[in-house]
Image (tube, rainbow, N blue to C red; front, top):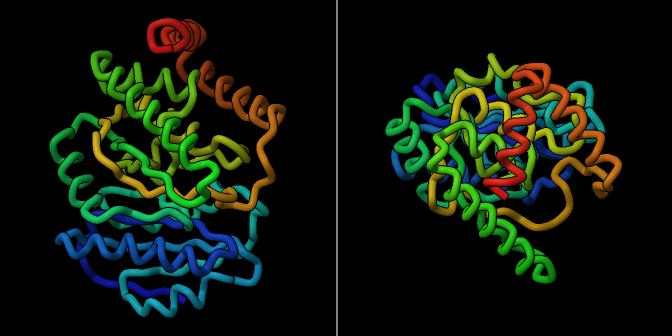
Amino acid sequence: MEYHQPMAVDVSVVIPTFRRPRELAEATKSALAQGNAGIAVEVIVVDDSPEGSGRDAIAGLDDARVTYLRNPAPTGGRPGAVRNLGWPRARGAIVHFLDDDDVVPPGHYAALKAAFAARPDVGVVFGRVEPFGDEAQLAHEREFFATAARRARSSVWLGPKVGLAAQMFFLATLFVCSAGAVRRECLEPLGGFDEKLRLMEDTDFYGRAIRRFGAHFLDRVVLNYRIGLSLMHSPAADRAALAESYQRIHAKYRAEWGALDFYAMKALARTVLK
């Protein structure tokens, strides 16, 4: 089932989903509602469930701006691979990778479009995250994202690439996947997401994008982030799995930028930016 519309698109929203039809409908509606601010939006839903659990939720919206794709070879929990099925179909100048349980706050895409227009020198825009959901975790999550926002602000003096990229690669991530957006023209040079990464694939993707194309921190809430289970039904992250992911991420960085740059960025993160 695919819906298409012959219009110019400002923002293409790619939503990977797995067996969360209610949350998927809410996430999709929040993206489509950005059109009320005069932003042309398309939504590309990529369903990774074998039975196509998101089909009815999308059909119920009955909106020509939505395209539904069912992954013919479900990944079993590789969100990068699922996102990579969606973005090649994007027609917008800006691509937003929205998780199926998150919510886009009103007016975000208008602010996003304005931020990209004002900063033609950057390929990524990200902003503050406001968590909601599990009350037991809410205070902790709010503190984490408040700290991340302070760290992002503190990197401005280093320009749009170095400080932010150093933090993404060598310190705690500055934002979750749904809180960032990227210019469509940057995706092919980056090769999309690393499909071999089961964990931290979004940190790797945005770290590479920022290091290569630069980023702008939009100092406003850009995402309502639902606290709960992982989007793509991954098991709880353990230290060994995270270590394996970071080993691959860092090995790729050294291969692309060289050992001198790698250790200089690591030292910057662990001293000046820590």
